[in-house]
Length: 475
Image 1 (cartoon, rainbow, N blue to C red):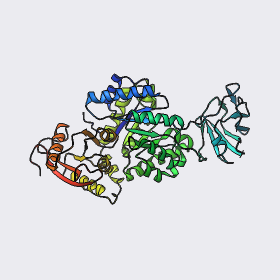
Image 2 (image 1 turned 45 degrees about the vertical axis):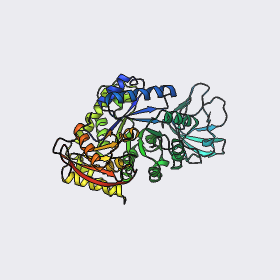
Image 3 (image 1 turned 180 degrees about the horizontal axis):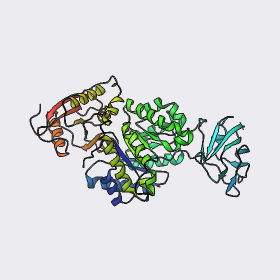
Image 4 (image 1 turned 90 degrees about the horizontal axis):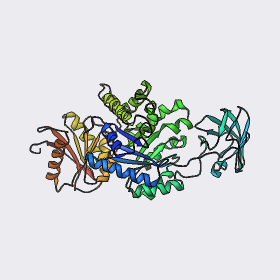
């Protein structure tokens, strides 16, 4: 099955979409990668879902990527004697280390790292920003605040700290256990939540040891401030607009989304745009016009993937939501302005052989109007560099390693095929032309361009270009 679009669709699975039959429907509607949210999934269910996705993969004959999204540190206040309390703007309210039930003037905060890190003037946002507090003083055991906005607080509401750099990593004990479990289940990507600094990625990388690629979720101001360093240490980025829009002014989020997308594209790292893309389709069979426009902006910007969350996990119309996203993306990519916008954002290649070859392959393919760029890739690096160029022609990534093909299913414009390794150069060219024909990327007499590393089976050695005729003698 060949997709007629470049951007990929990432669908979250949940109660509305966890059966094998529904997963197959979602794939056929357009889902390329499935996300398992570990905030709501235990290890047994996760293994069951991975097994069902792999069964669908075998049935449809296409590599399908799996992203496991770790919960990250969830910071919450304690409970109240009455379950909730009304507050007034201007009053004093204290968060402290006393585990007694809360009152209208104080509540337990079971996070010593917050109590010791917040300084006077820092903001504390409760319940997704519905309540805003400003710290007046902090002594390490309590934080005395003034209520700036909001009228109430209730049990176990989440706490966001846009001004505070917490001295804790992105991995909790639950995350470490979840990470071990998802790696054992052979997922392809692992997303880290609430990354603040590049060091937050180091522990996950050490545990993963290359068994899965690491995606950094950008949802805190501290991460935006150190974006370049985080990009360098991650394999991909997710613009997690939900928490980003809580911790930063809502009006700043669209600009930050563009900054992150362009920075990731320059670095040749995949970038996913997530949260509330077709939110109204949780309960309605069609989206709002504003949501359609939102999805289209991410596609015009050249994001690698666009993501559905509750729309496909728990909504009433999961298949329709995926199909709608597929239709929007396909229509945008057919728009006469699309190619010009994508080309205008293209950055200079890095001074490496792989980038130079990828640039040359794109320019030759577009100049000669070739049918496809076919990249042999064992580690995935050649595929990544090819996708960074955002060519107008399709990229076909051939890999003898199924895990590599699954990982690359997240990449913009990349059609992944698991193929036996070539014996020699002639076999490589013949195999590439045959696959281009079989997969619908060329007909007899069409030309394709092939990139690979010579000698064969040498990871990261992309150094060869070859133009060949499909179904005819190689040239």
